Length: 307
Image (cartoon, rainbow, N blue to C red):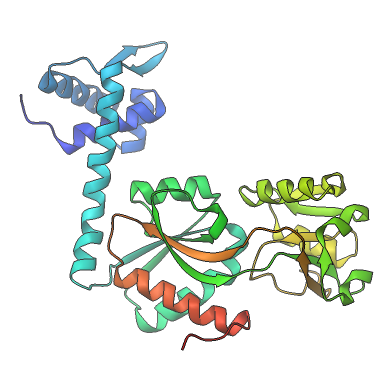
């Protein structure tokens, strides 16, 4: 068998992902001719047909091609992880730190990390990705994210989980709302309110399930991806919003005061966690982010400091 190259595997995976040589070539920033020739060489090296190429229908994989792509992904991911392994073993801070967060957490988690790194690790560039947890976990598994800051009950298999801080379910109300002065509110008391909730998963799925189980799903009037829309509607006393976030400021974008009242009922345990690939050692960058957020949680969530 002739030599199989990482570039050939990269092109095969790209074409498998998009179902087209031209789109796969664009993704890899090369010409379609180069990708087509590379696939031909790979098939000759392996002595097997991996793809079916039809000009009008794009590219599909043979059964053997599907199996080879699965192994190719593992090989490419292992190669991408080599710098992380080396940095961790050498106790080195890598030059780029790629952090993934859910939008609800970004405002709370990202600023203290960037501030601390700017002061203590100014040569480290931080790259951020906000998305839903399916995307974040996929990127973590592929090795294109180094760490995820997320919620405990959204964690998927294949990661090492480090607890950061507990989080309480709350309902965000205007400071003028009759519920604003309550010490707590049962979830089933929200049936007569107009609710607005985040429409991004998995928070959306979690809240819909909780509201259904407590008999108040009918109260959801609006859904949005925007934190500002939620806070402004609540601030105008047009809605209330069940939230799962340690970091919502208690003022709307329009300057109206808000109050976050703890929710009670049969609620799942929740908390902020850091997720890193389970097959990697904890690197200096991982430890720095975790330590920063633990200190931040003590300051902002009124938690007891570790002894």
